Length: 113
Image 1 (cartoon, rainbow, N blue to C red):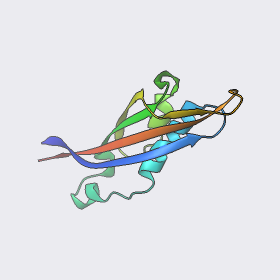
Image 2: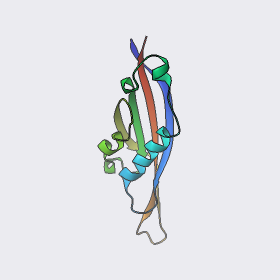
Image 3: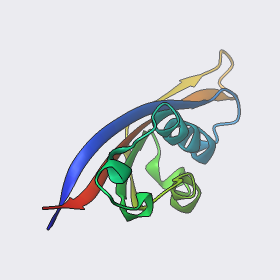
């Protein structure tokens, strides 16, 4: 059997004030996941916890994301989190704060023949 890509889910998350990279990243993954209800595993006679989810988060400063907090969002299966440079940080007028936008992609894989 081989791990095959079943679905790609995408989302966006923000932190309006505070530049909390983890908060925006968690919101982005939730946005990607919570707009779907995947029945593929069950339809194939597999447990939903048999899914593997590969999460990619894009933010301007990848080292500021708590990967474990992002991974904790997954409701089923096991996963990995890779944080890359991307997203946006839009400073306020006086430069004392910014709005942060994170992007998320979640690739769901099942072990299929």
